[in-house]
Length: 143
Image (cartoon, rainbow, N blue to C red):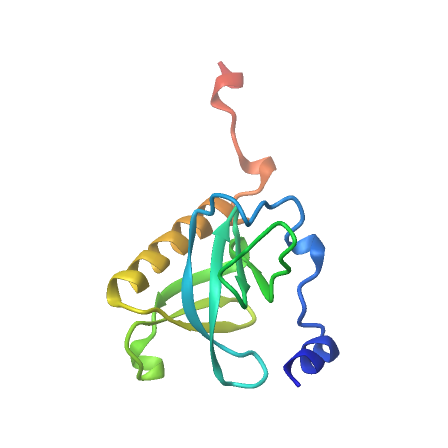
């Protein structure tokens, strides 16, 4: 049922969303999180990988070159990542928001939640489009 809904709604990630990212090797962060579904609002435990400005998730922990992500979020398009225990009334909850949607996650501990928030936050800053290439000043070339 879930796979039918995923294909009908186009939720399966486009391979272009994760092309050239070796998500199976040396991620910036990886681990189990519980994620709320986009269409069917059930909670499912997924293996998450943060690498090169992408947050990818998989059904299984054993991620290989041939693995296909269940979803991909380009964190550079995200505006905020913050705790959400008060919103969900669940411990260790946090949210990740873009201009169009908010996704909710639950970590296994307070420490894990804080580590995910910090890692995703750093990635948002590194990969955000708030400064375009034309606005970057190369100070070495102006001397």
